[in-house]
Image (tube, rainbow, N blue to C red; front, side, top):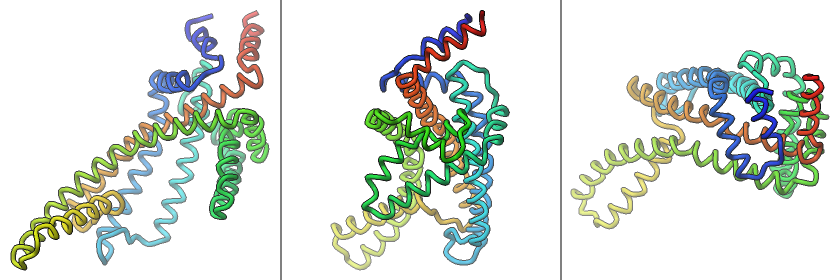
Length: 314
């Protein structure tokens, strides 16, 4: 047995939260090239979408805010969603194979997603529809939370285990049964960690741009305040609110009225998108590790894998 197989066999054991975090970043580091290429597909498409919508926003009459034709925005958003489904599916399958020590290429990962696309899409739509219908009823939010985590492994059961759409959710429920609180706690920790890290670039750039814009606004406000004899405390209160609103504005829908503004917007969104793509595999790898942890604890998956390898070697 070679070193890679030994390392993989050693990892096929029940894991606690710290073990999962350590394995999550370790697996990502070892297979960074594969994950980067898969995520690069989404980056290229989404960056192009930002560029197109930015040009529409600049050329369209009005305030310079996003006013691209609704049909164009809808089509681009729909294609982006399909691309994201393919990318996430590729990361899930790649993560599973990498965890098991199987050599996997980005092309092979996408081929598997393509082969299993309709069951995967069906389970995705079924999962999303049920969970969101429960959420919008308000009183169904606790049930949405329960089923959201109970069925969260549908991607792996549809792509990796090759289950039909409905059976993918059922299979996920079987794995989570008896360990819902454990799955909830570990995944909540992973989600919070990834969300905090992902938010850093967007918040930082929004604050920088907002403060820069707010400083320009302050100069006009200060001149008006001096001429009008406004109370300094009232001026400070008013200018602080303007800075806050400018920060929130740049973080959501920045003004695009010139080519330089478009360039600044595209650079900001490109940087933020690159960081998002960089972090995207982390949470998915974490979910994959929790999936295998459930299989090891409930089904003795580690024993099954080792027995299969012994039979191959004999």
